[in-house]
Length: 594
Image 1: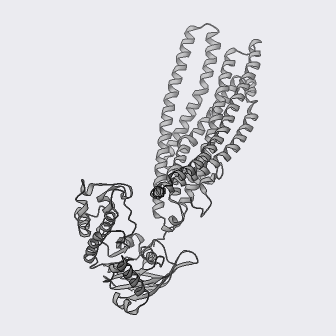
Image 2: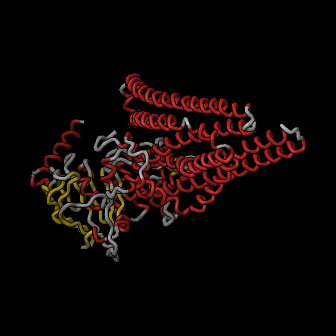
Image 3: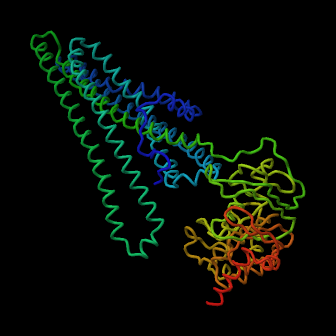
């Protein structure tokens, strides 16, 4: 995983952060009616629980002791009715809290995904994809527990404790005080548990982050692992990381294994004190046996929400850590700004001009310096140069994947920063060397789900680039399913699909970035024929390593170390015997040797 900044997957932040909670509650606000309903239902459920021991006290003192069978029968029916009523209320409470949680999580996931799509490529350059996926999946799911089982259910535990206090002090304040005598020890044990489990949980998150990172990286690069026969070595490393994760989890379980028995021991001590003191009063006939029975049950009920609140603390802590990372993502402003009132281009011609453009991905490390050139409407311009010369950076700037530090980039004489960035991208189609296909069918990978592209248009685009030759041989033709990353298609077929995709959107400006470098000779000839037809009437920029593919370009721009060194036609540049001449001779010699 990237170390460009502190690994936020292992940071916990505060156990409770009021600022973060206020921001989380903004997502709850649209569903406040569910919260109000849940609190009211919690109040009822919490009251029905302690009611049972009180009814048992009545049954024992008023009916069993007095051998009143009729009264005992009716109090038993009332007790059963109370249990059924509590079960119904509990069902409604659980349903609506879970419903609220799912609605909130749906809204949050949509907001995160929408924000991620707005982020510029600069953000993705410095942020591992696995971290972003974790934000949308694991961290959001942690908040689901908070909303569905945490915040609202905390009210239930608190209400139960308050109801128990009320019943106990109403029945016998002496026994109530004896029951609470172990409370200081319980508070100390809870404080110690929180401290220890917090550190243990930090280690669990740290090792889980390492495990996720290692897994993602090696599944992505599985072909390299298998080619070099490194399965056993990588399995050994994975086992070591997995063992550390297992140990961290076992350590966290240890503290739970200590805390909960401690609560049980304190509960037993409290019951023993009640039996000793209350039993003595029963013997002396200053207290009824029903009160003693009720207090034993009250004590058992009292410690149950205490244990639950400890679990809620863990949920709260997890949620605070998750929300901190989620809001860190949502607050990231690595976004290409858009004009509030953008300039509109009418009757786009496709003229492109770079004026003294300087650009750096990282401050102080310029990859383009003082770049100036002009492309007339309908011209085909090729950009050549060694790897790292800055060719692809020019495309990234023209499409506003990044913003320049100095200079201007103009389309039809208008600075692209003054245009609506979404409208700008509609003017341009790009075919990249590394083709990415989505899971779906052939049709959706050409149209990308656009309803503005008709069946005739996407089939025509496929036919022009020659993609229909292999598409029509597929069992389901355009409805044929495409596996992840187009695994079932050849490199050439994927390239043809990406070419058809670019053409289906009928751009004014067409950019080909090493578009034919990964295809075989037969496919390359097919694409070259299609290009000759398609470039007519479009402004085109072609980046190519194979100089034989761009000899007919109207203009060739030669780049070297971030600067433009030569501009001219193929014949003119050869005549000058400069950088282009050397590149051409080098490739020509290689072809002769091969």
